[in-house]
Image (cartoon, rainbow, N blue to C red):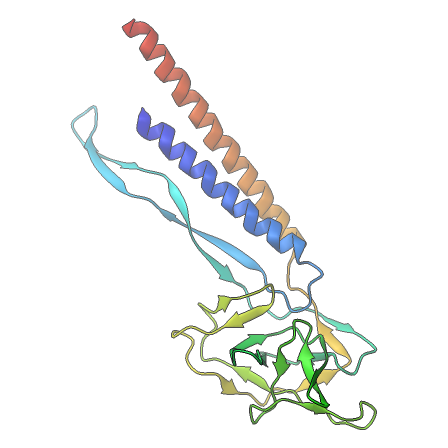
Length: 234
């Protein structure tokens, strides 16, 4: 009886975590370059017991949120009036370097601005990271009217497992390998919007709510049965 109670409570907690992931997707519908996160679940420990007729029966211990995958499908583009906005026409990432630590992260968010370093100005992200060119150098800005700005595009052999370090910034893991310079073109005065599909997210909300309700009902039923058993013993 205790097993059914705990299995249901663990399942309810897992559905709450799923709702948290969906809520984060909804919160970033208007975030440039944001990629949808998707929850993946895994079964907990199974035990084998003897059934009423002598047969073997497997009893599960519930489920848990195993991992959160990132869906790197391309989002729709948004035309802007800024020459510092860039859109990647295909697969790939912009490379951003944190000037203090030298750490390099990758993003699809091409909503760039200008940052000063010494007496010069450079192309940077909104959080202060400098955008890199094909040689891995900062992109110096002299005259926006005449400058030809060419941020580099990098790709990886596989995107599965990239670690999210912000709403739209990612760092590669050992599984992803080294960054590869890509020949994919970029478009100026254009941004990539979020790839969150509202209809799919609403479906996830409904599924999670129903599973959560069923789990709580199981908790309630288990508690009522245990109460009845205890009263009979008395």
